[in-house]
Length: 130
Ligand SMILES: [Ca+2]
Ligand SMILES: [Ca+2]
Image (cartoon, rainbow, N blue to C red; front, side, top):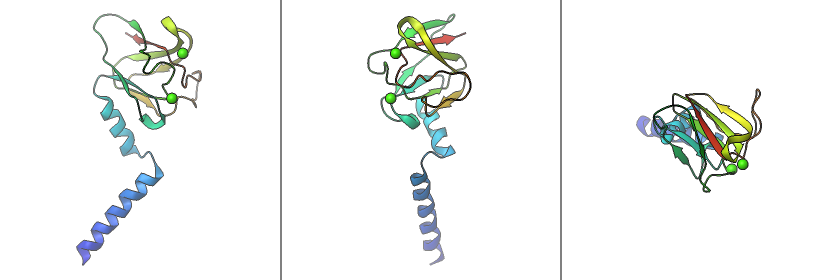
């Protein structure tokens, strides 16, 4: 009888966490789902939908125009690389920018503190900073 109660309590706890939304554990899972040493962009908030994964190339810094599948759609990002990544809103990396520090993530590119511009649904080009 006691065992049954304990199991029910843990199931209840799990569903409560699910309803609240993004827990620290869920955020850790999102970073894991991006993969080690990858920079990832997601179409939705909270690391959901349409992930684009980029593996840093060897050598010095470089820029990449995003493929049409994610161009102007990124709303959250995970940077699991050891490099900073500038996200720019125009082709060939012109325009407003958002700097993603190494080993960082942002579940909502529309609301940022600091000097970053609002780049939600606008990122077109990324610069891998080395
Ligand atoms: Ca989006
Ligand atoms: Ca753009």
